[in-house]
Image (cartoon, rainbow, N blue to C red; front, side):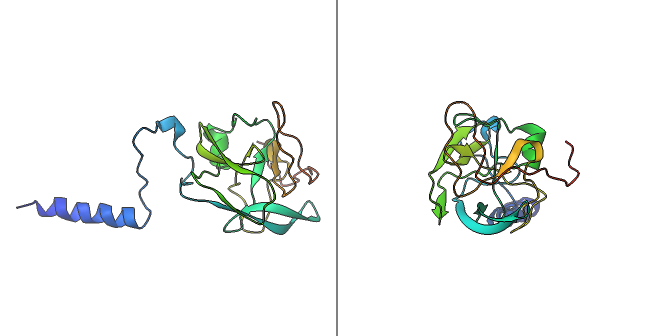
Length: 175
């Protein structure tokens, strides 16, 4: 006969896992390559939306839920420089199989320190913890810029500016 506390604990773990409350590591994945800040490796959809950016309406990239996506100017097509505390503020968008809706650029996956990070025209993509659906608050903060549908592909070692002009954030973020 099984011990009742073990059975109850097992049921609780199963319920949490079914509800998405537990993320299990996959075999062969190192801790350094695990996705950051709760983004999963499940399929992610990148779509476009018309949103105000620095006083102008721009067509930007968003998550399926409408949260704006950003690129980090120092990143390269082969490496994300967003790790540690920076990745907590700017969670990388990760997915093994990203899909696009209304995007004209190339979606891809960069296997790096952030796991399977979604890229657009070679730029690793991020969200910002202070943003909400349809609200861009991170433009120009810490070398992050909103990813637009017309974001030029990365060439060479650094990311070019987006089609949206980088505006001073004016939101008091000095970190």
